[in-house]
Length: 194
Image (cartoon, rainbow, N blue to C red; front, side, top):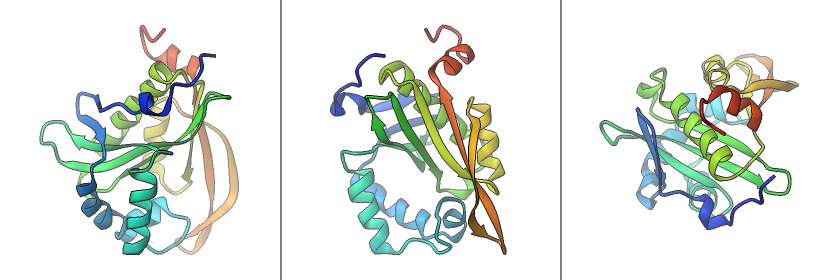
């Protein structure tokens, strides 16, 4: 396995797809983050706690994680309109073992179900394997988030395990599903990836 690149080199200015463009976050994106992560439905799909983040929590998260050096966080823009609709990131980049955790939130609810998240995920996976020389990209998703699970499966992620009844939502317990995609699985899906 190739050595992981230095931190600055693993942060591209942009990743361009057909529907979306991923760009580095800017300070003014905090306004959108505040709106997204104050939304009860976004909180339901993304947080272990049942309540949205407070404004102070959002601000700390944005500046320490999204704008910080430990995450590779990218803003998701609709290519045609430049509208900022969400965020995606790698965390826990492990160069020794060639792995990372993937996170994505489409914060604009009117952008759900249009394939933007799927394409953003595909762009990030391609970056992980072709530019960062990683071997494995993993994620977790709540069992009730069937739309996200379908999108991840479409991108090649497979279920590798679950934390049984780890999350309480809608009056019952649900599993937290662990999924991953490996380099050879991605190469088999993408013509010319090697």
